[in-house]
Length: 137
Image 1: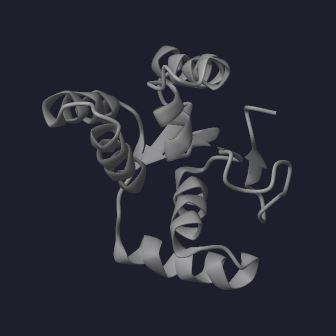
Image 2 (image 1 turned 135 degrees about the vertical axis):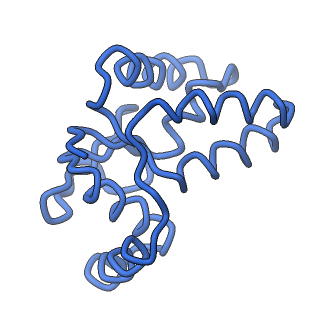
């Protein structure tokens, strides 16, 4: 896998959030890029799991949330593996991140991405070759 960007869950969620129009517009641009430039933007199984859970929490039916998640199966996806967990534990120790953020960072690195598109990490910080970019700033 050789994506240039990796999207965190929050970016996908904002693409479906009618209560945050400015963030929705920015998020939709990233999602559109994922569809129009196949292979350029990666996600992970964790991202899809979190997307499903949060869509349902926000009132989207399970059937619709499942359809949305399955649609994203066409993108490059980093699987949850023991190796990914091991990498995340190393990321967690190095950068003092939560396990969940460390898993996202490890997945971004595994995808080959040089940029992690997220609002959850420090904008502009370089995490050993993966730069955090907050698209809402």
